[in-house]
Length: 326
Image (cartoon, rainbow, N blue to C red; front, side, top):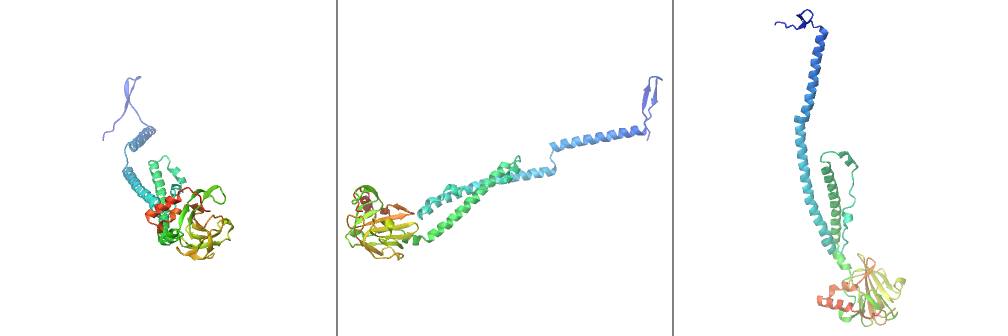
């Protein structure tokens, strides 16, 4: 192969002279070429990495897109499940618990106790961070509500299993035979015949002849029998029955009792006889119903042995504003 030489024009001699290149010059030239090539290669590589994805990056992007679609589908599934759970919660409060006379579960209990994860801040600035956070929060909320609803169904099952026992214990009849008594005064503000002023009448007065039998209106245990309870001053000879499930009934102004304290009684069992003891102006039975410590209108607990027509007549008579007997 013919060797090429480099010539340089010399103005002093007006002739071309051969340029002699030293080894050092050749080494510098080669080093510059190599360095320039390396720099250019790196620049092109960086530009290429910014503009074009590597096979691995393309695979990761496809996976991320798939995960994002899956997360959105999970959000839709959770939305449907939340709607189903909300319907169960509504039926639980408005139907099941209403039928079983149980208190509904408040919303602040159903939605309480949702944990806040401190590690969420690590995802700040990441793509789809909000999607992941919101999904996690909804999952935690759903888990909490499902747990509470499961507990509620356990309670409802127990209450339903005890419904027969509950029905036997809750007051449901009149304390006197309906053919042997008359409602003289109902629940509400009335004029007292002995004290001579208007005050709250916390029961109903059933007028009857002295000695008329008085019966338990539900299964329970006798708490007080006679005149021994100072808190029942003015009621004369009285019987207080604890029925459980938050209910108690009071039968006052008896002439005598037929039960003792601590005795278990059944609905319809004889408790005592009508009289006019205590602050009473005539023979009658003053009857009260207590629920969770509050005195409520007894008239709404006469439904078990009255026809609808008789029940309406009883309510109408009890609502009349008149003088009570005690």
